[in-house]
Amino acid sequence: MNKNLGKISFLGNCQTLAYSKYIADLLPDQDVKWLCPDRFAIRGDKWMTMEAVWGDRVNQHVICQDEVNDNLIKSDILIYTPMNSVLSKGHNTEAINEKHKENTKIITVSTIHTNVEGMKERECRKNIDIRFSEIFDKYPNSAGVADDKHGMHPNTFTILESVRMICNFLDIKYFSDEDYKRHLNSGYPFEQNK
Image 1 (cartoon, one colour):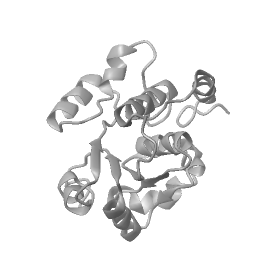
Image 2: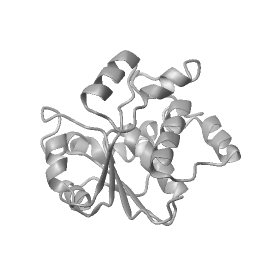
Image 3: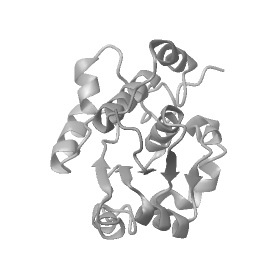
Image 4: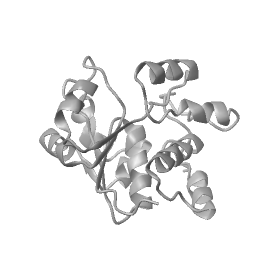
């Protein structure tokens, strides 16, 4: 079991924001931050106050792009969703490869999408390290998309299983059964119980 992983950064969409929150809960003594990519920087401050994307619960986040890039350089582990240069000028895969320090452990994760076959195709094409399509294959009756206006957010079960995959990859202890059930029943981040 890993004890000191160093500075852990997540970069990506609202799903990575949720992963950073759960991993920070699991590793309270580690420096875990969510970094807002340039693609979302204009809405970044708004995200951090929106309950629907759980930004109101993530204390360790970086919106300012100069600080994001500084954190990228200092990260020991970077977990991110690959973006192409059309969507992100400063945080696409090529730019990320130029910004991190030499010994940074880079881990790519899928973006969960309603179309599982499309997700599998993107995972293969982008050579993703942690492939969340496996959750849909393994748990076809539980994995899915939240019933929200976006139709793009994973349900709570899928988020928690995604976090489990990240924990397994990093050799981090996962939630106890009791904590897992509590998180699952909470509906956070995208199926919030009102």
